[in-house]
Length: 365
Image (cartoon, rainbow, N blue to C red; front, top):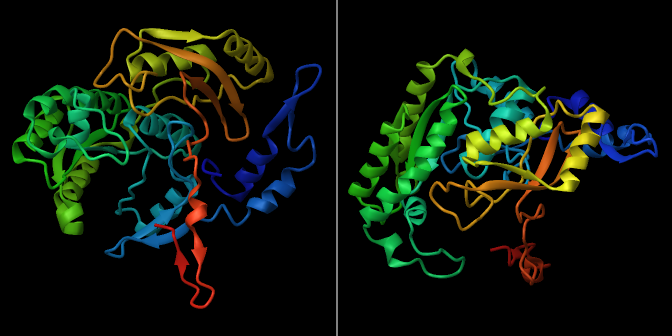
């Protein structure tokens, strides 16, 4: 759904889903089983985005979504196309790519832009002082536990050490031919000195601009300067500068190695025996020209979630490679990542109920 350009394209994608292989090792699709049409009927309404609005009533299209660590992690092509039509030729559409630029952005450019044909002019990388402090060696952050004082008080040493992570993301984005604007998402505990360290490091790394954004406290007015910077960044770039990181017709192995070395900074890639067999199977089935959607931890450039900053001297371990022929990509599983988001041992639905007298929903928050 997320990579479909229209209903016809979604029908083709659903029908092309591979459900298994024959005894002669030929792929068997949903259309081979005669159920591609029925699948499309089930999804016919789902292809239309939900329109919502911000607190200041800016239209927002919500469709498909996050989790770029285990999927493409981007909003749908249909939503982007509708938004572009609504804003007109002189308007701007901001579309989100989930998690860090090493996964969400890379998949946006190499997978989504290939499918849509759209060429972006600017990438906005959102950074926080707190996150960079963690990458600079700050204490572990655990959900439900109070933040350490290092994150609540000025600590220029941690910020200075941690900006290397942001610098790597900026360098990665520039490989695609887009201008980069860094949005420094301000928390009330951030100091001017810490923000200036991030701003200067961003500019030195080649960002078109780096702007403090205080929309949390001031709403749209707090992001005005960020919007102006993005507008200028788009105006000074030609969409024809946009380029993919790799040629989709390269061998599967080579595409995975390019992403691992160029984006993650790995020394190389180690493929399990199963992954080797699957690469051969996909090549023989005619799927070797599909782009790559790597599943890996979102917490590090490496497969080790605890390796902060910009780790070096590591290799990417590919356990297996799943085929998503219908959607149009291959799906290497790297490290210890789980492809289903982790859930608590006590599901949240235990707390959800409804007041049958008033219709009020209880326990959602």
